Length: 476
Image 1 (cartoon, rainbow, N blue to C red):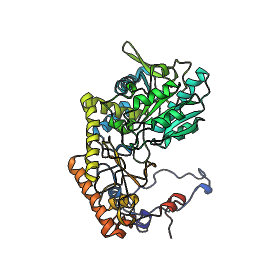
Image 2: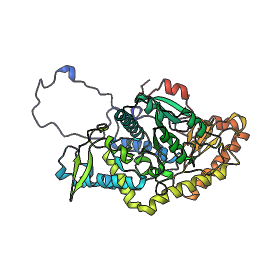
Image 3: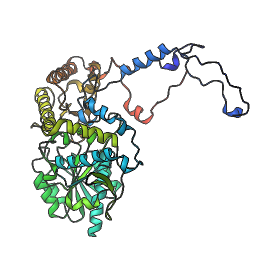
Image 4: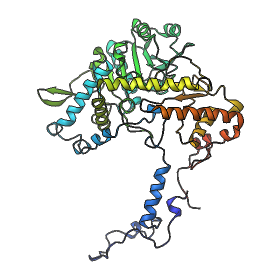
């Protein structure tokens, strides 16, 4: 497909400006700022419309197809959430306008915090963090502040090997030494390894539960007890809260602190890197360290409360990504308690349906009931076909690729996360395509290894694309 600079013809126009009817003035701009040619393509209006309409059909979106990597990047979210975020009173509100004309926005933030406290089981929640990793950073700074107040020097942080890569990164940013805790043969935290590494030099443990293998660790209460008995805190990476919402409250499991990805669990698609929101919930003992301000209520009036001498301070300009807060509030209120529980139940059901359907075709490293996602591997594929080849071949069949090669503790990993919104017919189609690709790996392996064949861009040199990206079109 040609880029728009390769189309058009000299003299062709999409607009006609009226003749100049005011006197021309000389010397407004010096000649150095004036130029005759902008090197813009010359096209008619219909050419421009057709070009960009066609371009839009080349982009894959959740409205056009299935994402088997689900909430990690893109799950379907009700359009009413977008409509609420576009309401003039929200969309055009300015964070510097006075409280007296911001009561609706403040009420939404106040009520959203209460809802998140109820759903998660924590005492208070800050809405400031801009995304999951930012929520992690906020949480680790709170842990750091907690031990500073206790005048304890704890320079180390334990991180489960099944956690997200941002976990050790957040630790290092705060000056902690990140110590890996291994998983056992069942994909749970190795309790013996945890006991051996947990001591008075360790500030706490960062744990994702369900973890990135898609498995819920049944030993969570014992894990928290091991850390707490040595004076540490337990941080929950809430990126996989989609599997628990309405069913289990992390604040009641022994965690001290947790971030929640509103843009994953509670609406707002964030493919392409944004937008996001990563509120952080804490136990009663840690409330004093949360970022300020809180939104409080006196009578029928909502206001910002900046009090808190031990607060870690602001983590975000103004009060957070408000548009995402509106979407999450709408999502939660629209579903209600029963609907929220249905998110987890359907997400878990969908993932296990695919898991069981593919377990005889692909290698299943952990053969147990999963949560909202599960891991396959390319171990059993014929002729050296890899996870990346499978992902690329799915593109030829009009399905977005799943996450591959993560988590790192599974060689050749393929992460499948169907979310709660997909019907059985879509899941069956995906299952059949995965089986078909496995057959192709046996019978026509070069077809799979050379995929994709039907997309606008073919197989790229991944290493070169990362190290020498070519992001600019240049006329030959």
